[in-house]
Length: 95
Image 1: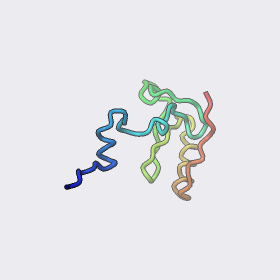
Image 2 (image 1 turned 180 degrees about the vertical axis):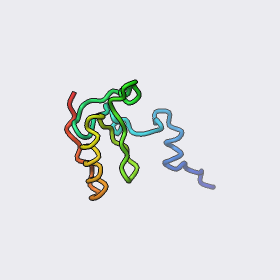
Image 3 (image 1 turned 90 degrees about the vertical axis):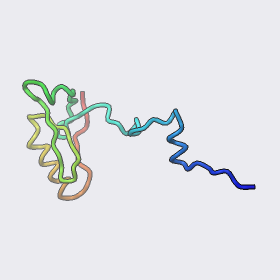
């Protein structure tokens, strides 16, 4: 008697309706904060008529949010991150 074929773990995950595709919810960022000062940034601040926030990109391709007033400090933090390879030393978040 021939053995029936078993599904691989990936195939079982694909067929499982409770498995959601995409990033893990615990890994998603609930809020956007300035890396320099830690201020909460709303998504519409990036596109508003007077844009009060911007995205800065490191040499590795990661993007970091920054207030327009904190750009110089944020660029300094990102430059240190690029130079050392250590995680960015972001400010503590505040609302």
